[in-house]
Image 1 (cartoon, rainbow, N blue to C red):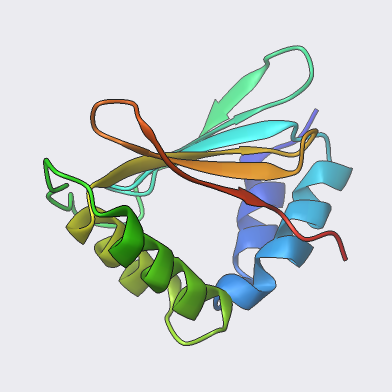
Image 2 (cartoon, rainbow, N blue to C red):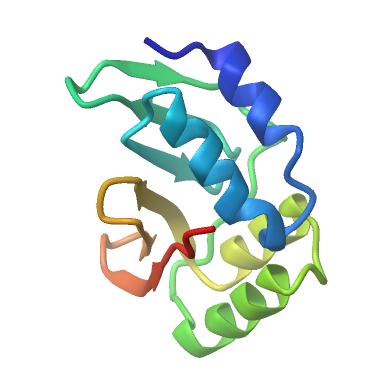
Length: 130
């Protein structure tokens, strides 16, 4: 069973989107199968194969999530984040600005799906395997 301390240690190594695949491998190795991150404050729910759940604390004050989403603008922000041009908080602000409420990463399927406030899938990406 994984702990929040293990997850926080792995997450502390993430400086940009370029570090995301390594982070995924690290938390997958400790038993995380899926996680759901909420943009408003970046609290995250982590699950193992038996749906055991741990929740992190909020990382910042609440952001206002736009009611309408902009998939094209979000995909641009995602691409620059993945190239290491923005830090995590900036990426979260960009998510809020483009109407992204949360993302769900499946470490089994190796996908990350971004959702708007209505629950619509805005973007699906494959998580690179390193």
